[in-house]
Image (cartoon, rainbow, N blue to C red):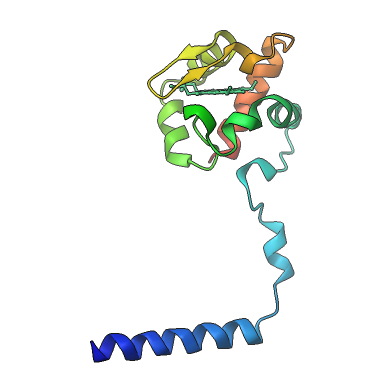
Length: 128
Ligand code: HEC
């Protein structure tokens, strides 16, 4: 009990010293704070990011309605084990899975196959 109390005090004082002495580091801003902030250099991924942000982010950023969130790397790694072509197929044609319903083309029928595929590529990259 006594030990826990002392350790606690030590922790608190450490933390407050740190925050008093270290100003916010500009370096931190370079690391994307969200997976979808990723700035890909590949042009397919750049195009995919735009589609993602416009049409897919609503469900996939935080994982609405059972959608796998981009923040969940393990979840995406597991889904990727099916192979990229299966993910493409599920994104283009829709997929009624265990967690919810993925609407065909995210519910935007005007998207081309390539746009959907690029969005999936971006999602796979960003979730890593
Ligand atoms: C209305 C919500 C919603 C929108 C919008 C949406 N998704 Fe999904 N998506 C889901 C849900 C729910 C699942 C999970 C289905 C399951 O596994 O049960 C999912 C799963 C997926 C998967 C994984 C499929 C698999 O086999 O594991 C991919 C890839 C995907 N979505 C891509 C997209 C793309 C690309 C877009 C935008 C064009 C998009 N989604 C937009 C809800 C959405």
